[in-house]
Image 1 (tube, protein in one colour):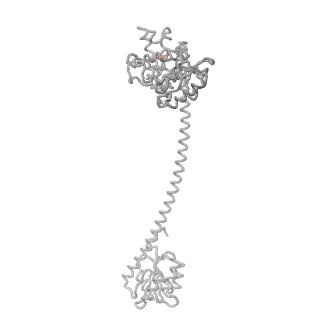
Image 2: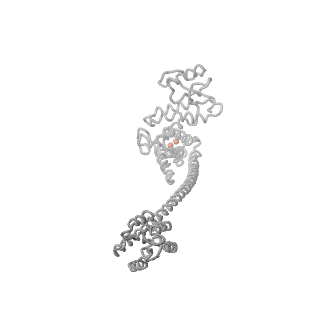
Image 3: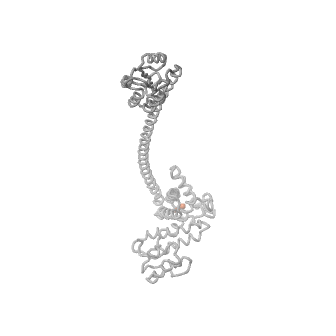
Length: 441
Ligand SMILES: [Fe+2]
Ligand SMILES: [Fe+2]
């Protein structure tokens, strides 16, 4: 039988001890789609139930010898609990019919003598009801199976998503590794290129690296995003690459040393620099900073005579770092550092961005301080708890709100350290205290 039986697959079982009743029931249902089975006693009815499949309705006479209809239906219910049961009974047997309903689980009774049409209608209806019950059960089972499949798919999907996520993560890590490998390779190339100018002009030795270190520290102090910091460092390393095209006599000069045609030729190096790296797409943003590193904050520079914030921030940072390194020209003692800082301070607003000056001081002291040979004294910016007796103040010490406390050159003793700590609690020193130490840690 298919999952859901058709009406023609079902059978009806009539049980009656009177042969003529059974034959009239057979006649009545002869043209029906369903098959008709008969039994002439309860016992026979039970054995039919045992041997035949797809019985969809049992109709039993109530009054039968040996086994009553109620008893037969009760036992039939044990064998086929879902098959609907109807009891046939005479007018006088209504009570017995009720017993068949109560004990035998009959769903209804039909009075003898029956009306043929009514009886046919009832059995068709009951068979259809039974068929619908099977169909419902089948659908329920299908839904449960689909739900189980769905749950299995979901679990599988989750597993596949996790597997794919892990795979994607691995690929991303691989790409990130390759990317950082490429970045390193490119940085190596940039550093190699940056030394080209220094090979032609020994005076420029270390210049690109110094400008890059100061620019990077300033960009980080300004909290710029990593990508922008990288661009600034690339540009700082390459800012003077255009000088390789300058004639030898112009190398080692600054724009302040030149005039006329020489100055005009010298001032082409930012554009030549940009052109030199323009073919490397990844370096184009850096190329733009290279182009503008000689613009002046007041618009007096070149090549485009940009002013103020129209000059890219990275180019303004590089210009300041460049200015400091040119003023230092290889020196790195604290006095020279201070003098260089003073010189650029004098040009704030004209040549350099005044806002950026506050971010250059510490990087300059730290960067050039680290370059001093062992044994020399250098400036270090320390926090009050890092101060030790014997250190010398590199500049006048004022409290956070500007109250003068100690003079430049004071050799710190324990009493000084105690009072510095006390002042620091009350009126903290902004940005640390510059002292002379033998060597930076
Ligand atoms: Fe330059
Ligand atoms: Fe430069």
